[in-house]
Image 1 (tube, rainbow, N blue to C red):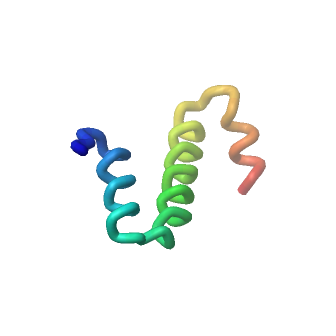
Image 2 (cartoon, rainbow, N blue to C red):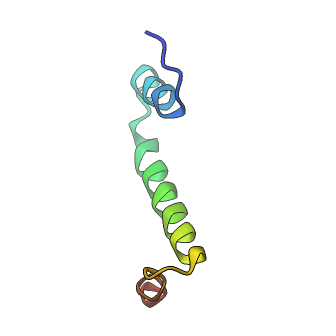
Length: 53
């Protein structure tokens, strides 16, 4: 079964290696990246993100 996307490759890695402990780390990294992008764009979400910190 060939998966040609990054998420597909990551999913296959987690299934084969049984490395489920990596999943929370990846989820937190994605959430931080989304917050950084939303905070840098200066849109209407910025005041709410700054209030979190």
